[in-house]
Length: 246
Image (tube, rainbow, N blue to C red; front, side, top):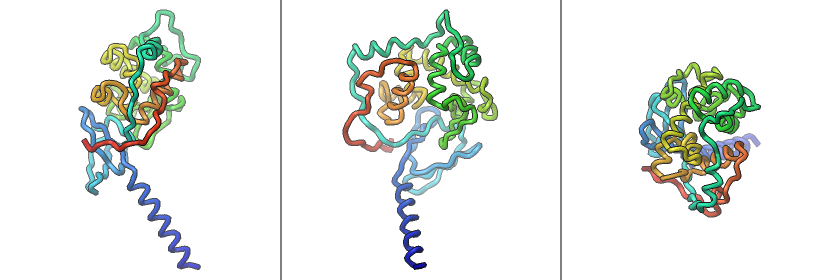
C-alpha cells in the first residue's frame, strides 16, 4: 500500500512538473526586447528568469516592462464601420467630467483633470486591472489599483513603495494613459492594448498584438466603458500557435 502511495505521489509530482515546464511566457523588457522563459520568480527588487535552455537570468524588476503568456493567435482585420464604433470612446478629459460612481472616484477625477484623461477610461482600466483592490498584486509583479509594474511606475514618477497608495498609483496609471493617448494619437484600441502589452508590442505588430491576454483585455475594457465590442475583436476560432523566440 505504501509503495503504491509513493508511486502515485511520484507520478503526480512528475505530471505537475511536466505541466509547469510546458508553460512558457514572454518577458517584455524596457526598450522593447523580449525574453522567452519557462518560469520566473518576481522578488521585491530582483526577478529570476528560467530560460528554456535551463539557464537562469537574474535582473532588476525595474527592467521588466510586462510578462505575457507565450501564445499567439491571429488578429482579424477590422472593417472600417466597426473601427468607427470603437472610435466613439472619448479618451480626452470632457469639459463636463464628473467623478465616476466607483471606489476612488474623487482620486480618479483629480488625476484625470491633471493629465487630461477621461475619468471614465481610468475607472474602466482600474476595474479590469484590480477590481478596485488597492492591495492587489499579480504573480507577475503588477501592483495596486492600476496594476503597475515597478518599471512603469518609475517611468512616471512613482516609487515602488508608493504603489499601494491609491492616489499615487492612480496618478502614475493616468499619466501612463496620457502618454499612450499622445503616442497613439487618440487611437482608443491601441491605447488600451498598449496599457496591457506595452507600446513597443503595439508598435511591433501595428495594432493589437496577437496575444490572447491582450485581446481579451481590450474586450473587457471596452465592455467596462459600455462600448460595443466589434465582432472582429472576438476570440477567433482555430489552433493556437506558439510565439517565436525572437
